[in-house]
Length: 166
Length: 198
Image 1 (tube, chains in turn red, purple):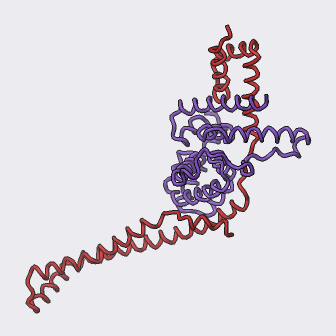
Image 2 (cartoon, helix red, strand yellow):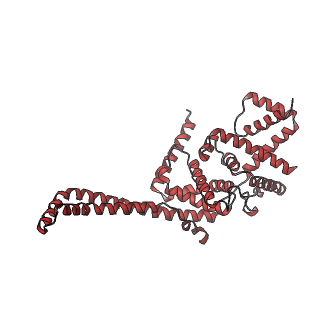
Image 3 (cartoon, helix red, strand yellow):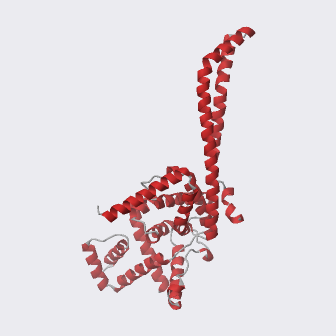
């Protein structure tokens, strides 16, 4: 009755028993097999010992590492908070500038036309100048903003080397 | 639902929601508390996974920095521990990919870098402590030779006491894979220990 297949089944169930509940039928079969087979009973003991040893073994985070990590996280949390606060202010300023620009746009257009007429500048030239002058600050602000975002959340190796030098 | 279970669930939900809000604000006090609470679990997991003390220490720091930076992505439906270990795991894999082939995820650590401390001798007699220390040595030695994905499920299950579903979330593997890895890992571990003892 006890051939390789039954031993394999027993070992499989022994593994499974350590992390899941077996059904009544499997439990009864396994218990009976372990009573009859000393080899598998020994294996069951090894599994139990292995699990007990795994539960006992410990790895403890070195206190110096934990202290350095806390310092590092605090410093970087403050830096990120400051950066985000600056970004919020920048975005708010951009939004206000955009609203202000939109409100002023009809008057600026008239001013540009008046100056162009006085200087005898061709219509396409002063109109193109107006568009560039109107959009350039916004484009520059957006480029600066995107550039900052790309570089901001990268963990550099230099940030991590602090612990060893402290 | 009975009253104690409801109270526990309510407390866990409240705690998760506190973590969500604290992480969004990058609250230093909360981060400090989380580091204090999860320091050993995270370090143990990293040590078991990569078996290299120096790399585990770097990844430990990097994981907390990532938690601070990506705190806004944490969702109260997740258990914080699962989210934390998933971050650590992804960082470890990235690091291994960068370092490969100089350091591989299965490279055996030096003996003095092994993470298993002997049991506290004050809690047992000197002989018991010696036997326990010997067993720990054996386990450490066997674990060194196990593939990383076996070490990982073993530590998550038997050290961290995670459910199979939580292990599946951390590792991103299907539940059936987690089960088969656990079963196989235990078989290999027990067989190797048997061989060693005989």
